[in-house]
Length: 534
Image (cartoon, rainbow, N blue to C red):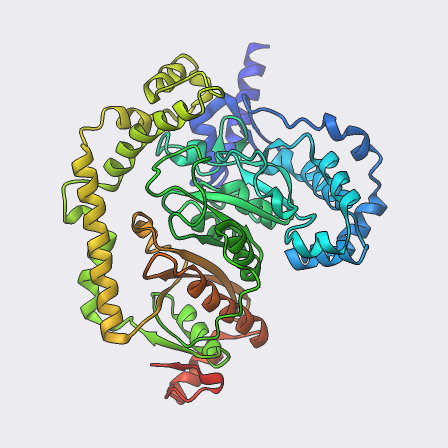
């Protein structure tokens, strides 16, 4: 009998180990061992907290497959804000219909993908109230009327964005404490929510820390979501999941006082959507910009960098369809190498690493947050949280190395300020060179790396877009646009809107054919719609 048990256990372990050696399932299984199970059909962390469907049980039980199919047909894979509002406005669906549809989607997918960690128990009641209030004026005045949002689990969501008529589905899963507890955990893992998985392939890294906010967009669990970023936590999962658009707003344009902090000097909320138009609308609502302002049709000069030949050719192909836009290839300008290196490796210019910088802020800002929310938490210091974790190690299977590093940090406020100042000066020197030499308005990087995530400490905005091409099979590549100054948000979003429309207008682009065309017919800057490449 004992031998049978051992043999059965070996078979269970081998089913994980035989999977791809660097696959997510192997890493999680090694670290969490018996506490964690991930197969093609099951994803479970022993201590995760199951979702509470009891407030919606009757409604979900009575929700028929016919109703679900009808909703799917009406949405037609278009969950944009405009589409949702038009369906409600024209009385094709109600707010309750939409809320129930998303709840059903959560019920169907969340046990495996672990996108949502907590449901809003008042969702259907609030949807019913919106339906009672429904009229033409409400639709026109409340720009998110009936839309359903997922909010990252480190954000306080009481009354958040409800002035715009938005319904909150619940909280989305995230890398534990926005990936500031330890460097050893996989992205998207939290003790409460378990392991958030990539919607397309569980072997792929979903990235983080706004993992659930990005993956939930891909799985159609809400109309839009709100994530947070300290350094890369919005753009990285949006890029890894693909076909998710996001904006890391200029620091201070979105409120950050209700984010559980990593670094108040960098932390910000930001939107995640399926298109750039929705990103811009949410940014305007959150930052108080008039939403009826005229579109910015001004000319833009944009530099681009990237190591992907296909990405560069794709961008060149789309240039013919971009109005009032000049694209400038910076890849061969060797004078940019040194100033760009200084931006991305600030530690070379001072004695502080990024982790030192991060950990100092963590130890400084967490107590500030806890003291201002004393009625909600039993801890007042990071040291107290560390001691609690030591007493409950089952909830931190990957350890808490960054927490410990934070309270033991030898960094002073003066050293912290020096790092920040050095980075800001390096970035300013780099952008001044770009502006003086090429008169640029912003910068595009091509590929699946967010080269300028380090500039989050400078407060400047960044946003992303996934572009489609063929070689000959369907491929996708990410581009990131970085502003040069705080409040360049609308500049970079306007550029991305132009690129998004051009990618749709161009249809199927085979970069092999396009590449041959450009070899035979060099670009001379004589494109329609006023766009050129220099």
